[in-house]
Image (cartoon, rainbow, N blue to C red; front, side):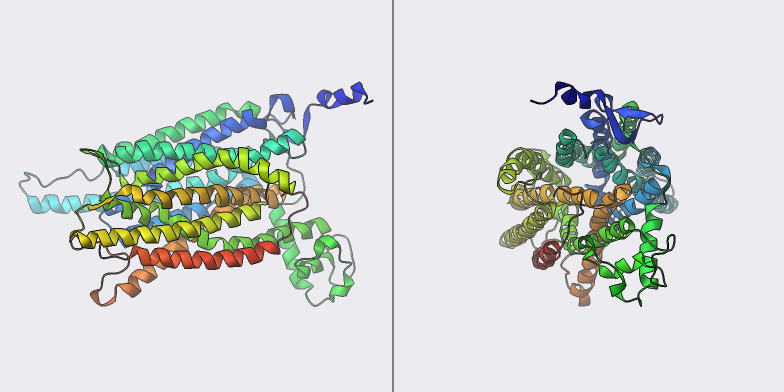
Length: 562
């Protein structure tokens, strides 16, 4: 029979190892962390996603409308901005993990974010000069042109200020939220696994509100109001985050060197000792991969002199980071597909019949709500049905490994591109049948609901691949570099956006030679988005094959339960 006193011992010791409260005192499990703290953190993330998608989801419409850019130029600008916004988290995560800490970085980044949104709102108010009834039309036209130039400069300055704010906010918030769960506690460990699913569920709900409400306001009421609302929501989100301060768990930072210094030294010593015979190293089972880094265990004279070599732990940290590189590279094509949902999909929908009732039609950008609907539908199904069923067969806490989840998501995204290409072929055929090829401003008599399958498949792909990448890069990085882990996952989407922009620019140049209509012609009835979608489907299939090859040889970090 078990000892009752022993059973009660865990209740008496309620402290959480390795964590302090906001005043530097030991924290107690019953009054800190868990879903209570995570709720405050999720709230600020929902606000941030509402604000971010309030800008990004309809940005191509603003660029091709009030700012007058061409479709290809606008798509390239959106992809470039999105790329910067998702690469800057690498800088934000570095500052957080090395100097500021995640909590301070979130607050500072949020303030920069709010400033950027405020200036963006101001930029939308600038072009107010009109030539109507003016006594000196030429002078007023010149002033209007000058005002528009100032508006463009302020707009892009504000836009990239938002990107900087997001760069500090995004990697720290999710890592800080996951930090509220103790991986060594059996109950909190399971909750931590579900956290990534419900995190994405919550932000999908915030994005859905943006797409249903904000896009309509921007296109039918006022762009100024459409930019001001995200600024207000972001300010409220920051306030909620600060209100949760007393409940947060803050990870204890040791006196040891920065993890960047430790990992960097491993690579430096491995290169310096590259000529030393590998036989001088007593290789263990855990060091089978990337054996060239094992040479960092040796001093230049092949001795284990203390202070001149790296520890086995440091070498393993470096290998853990290096193991992530092939997965990162093979997910880039998936990220290129991901970039199309807020650019070319939106332009595609803008040409179709979007009417709900007489006199009311939904904005093209609002079609992205079907991605959110799909996420809101599939995450509960995945978390509550698929995972328990898979767990019963595999015995793994997550049902399947994170790499299997990501690979399935990539396969679904390839299917989405096939569907998108077939729908676009149908749209072009409808335009030809009704004599609308040279009438780009006339709505193609084809209901916009034809686009729902491709949007829905993209949502399902996000549930599998995006959430899988978030959990994978958080779990597989060394503890002190988990903000960097989230930033690395985001950098996949950032580089993917740049690749999409580069691909579009190259194809625009090649297919638009000699005055021909390019694949991305402003008149979409003469363009060939279907060709581009077929190309992405083929590249996705190639990317999936490379990903499977890389995933099969991946060795999970020791602490992982994947």
